[in-house]
Image (cartoon, rainbow, N blue to C red; front, side, top):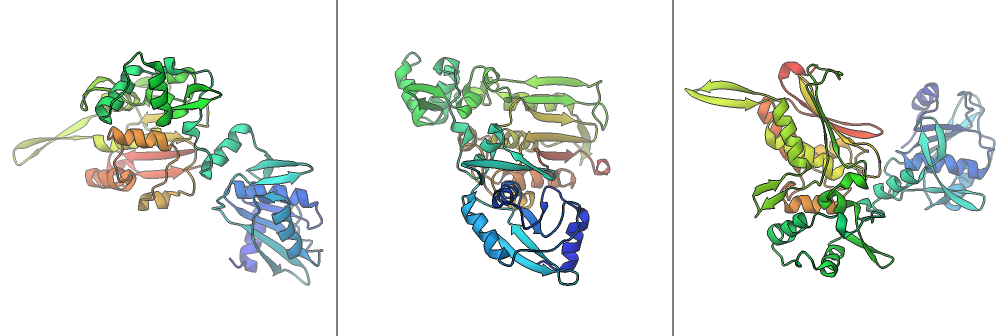
Length: 412
């Protein structure tokens, strides 16, 4: 993009933030690399050269400024970045250098050279700091380099898996032969080949996705594996809840054959919670009674399944939140949208997943539709057909929220 003076003045007036950094152009190259890499690891932004921390414009000093910037981006950042660079004339003879880092930088995490080390930095507000191990994992996951759901879960083994659910899955859902219950080695081979387990130092260990889907007690190893469900009497959070329930256990149900549920999974338990805490209205249409629920069940199911399938499981200790209010229902999934997905792209039917194993198994059970267009086709279209109100899809720094409105008068 070409930056004009009016836009640049507005950016300077607003000060430093999560997408804007002010710098003199006489700083050490490694200090500059740290700021550029941290912006690339978030959502891109601008580094303004020749601007003091307080917004005072002192202008550029270096005559070879563009070459200096490009050398920093190629020699002190890994993988190298090629930003857009321009010089904008300011008052008098002063000039400001504008480094534009694109928001969809694909090769996260970007590391900056710091002495003999390569360090991953993240941007928190207007400050830059070294990433934690969990934050770095999320950056690898965002770029598609790391599939967190197929990482082995240390300390776990085949004994932590619900063998009856696994038999049901392979025999009845996938319709393939599976070992007898006591054939441990054959089960480990099958589960390694299907990424439900992984081989680590000669041992077969359940993966994150395997434990979440088929584990006897997923929360023993993954505290974030659950749904915190609360029904409130009014439109705000309240200590006096109608019902509170922490939903734990494997994601998928155990079926008799392909249809009849013998033992529910977390999906069914969450849907049952919504059923208990929402109502239906009855109407007479041409002499026939029609019952209209607050929310269509297929929309509820799709919303819950999407939260389970696409949440960021690298964020530990945080459940999915299911909240029912008198005027709306909200499902909050920890973590930002995966990869380069935005709310608008999601509405248009963009199909990108964070947890491929979980999504594919849920598809086998028909929890997820084969097209991967559940948000536009089921959630949005379902609510528009139901009451004419489009759901709110909200992304913030730490979570993604789907908000369903009960009635037209409910949305302020």
